[in-house]
Image: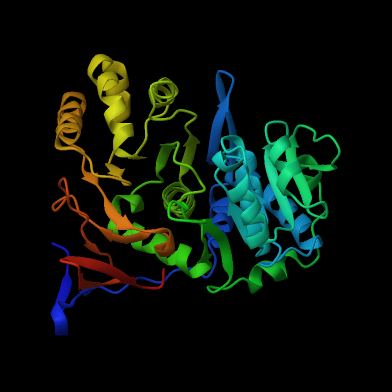
Amino acid sequence: RPEVAIERGAGGVIYLRPTAALGAYPPRLTDRLLHWAATAPQRVLMAERQGEGWRTESYGEMLAAARAIASALIARDLTAERPVLILSGNSIDHALVAFGALLAGVPFCPVSPAYSLVSRDYGKLAYLMKLLTPGLVFVADAAPFAAVLRATVPADVEIAAARGVLEGRTVTRLSDLLATPEHPELDARHAAIGPDTIAKFLLTSGSTGSPKAVVNTQRMLCANQVMLRDTLAFLKDEPPVIVDWLPWNHTFGGNHNIGIVLYNGGSLYLDDGRPTPDGIAATVRNLREVAPTVYFNVPKGYESLLPYFRDDAGLRTTFFSRLQAMFFSGAGLSAHVWHSLDDFAVMATGARVPMLTGLGATETAPFFMSVTPETSRSGHVGLPVPGNEAKLIPNSGKLEVRARGPN
């Protein structure tokens, strides 16, 4: 039973305060990269599809690459006023640049590829260029982004790419960044990163206007991971293995899930599928090969998997073989989908697997409220986790939820 104290204030205000205190958290998220690179350097941190197999990056390899890229970013005098913008989607190359920025104390901002590849007027991206004034813009492949790069990136802003050319512009190769000699101030720069250092800017959806760039500090990210580790206690039992497509420009995929893997020494397999009729087959292919210990998806993703779990006993057996929990967010999960997943888990292993959810936001980095296996059911988002307080305020016949905490 969650230990939450309830206090009623004037005007119908309700305060929810966990009685358990939040545990200690490190000043920098990259402290966990250093820890795992020292204790398990060969363990896979990240893997992505490469032909019929997987391209992998171990903890040791990620740290070495991040140190080189961090040195390159320090040499360019990048700062919060001149951050790194990453326009392409989830990939190991994206992660190399992001971890390099974190190690250097240079904020970065992952931007939805839809702003570049779906939009044709580039209005949101042009707005973001003026808002964030980047010092370096990175794409994995310059070719598909050529039009938007020419249209929105100022001439004095450096463009970097893992591959591809851009006619009329110089493009710095990712391989050149990775070949950067170690900067003499690198270790001192990293040591100077503190809880209030800006780690990244995450963009809101912009559905009600222009996107907002939400500041995410090191304190927010690190406190969040201790909240998660204490709430999802099974993370302490073994390094998590995640197969995940959720986009890194969103707080669920980019903070919650990458953070869980890094903080707990786990492995993240990048799912090149999507919960769409055209994309679900790739997800199924990956889940046939990699058995997750915890699985994250949106409700549509779980719904899309149901017919495959029903018809493919091998997939069902692999998926549930070591699964300790499932987690959804973004919308409500229907009772039909929930009960079907319970039934398939029982068919595969003889036991149900807890289905969890919560309530969070880009501004809370994102963990704020969570159910437990005992309280989890459709329509519930749980209670504030240790370290957070919730304030419920009457507003137009409903209760507005406000959050306070180190995240």
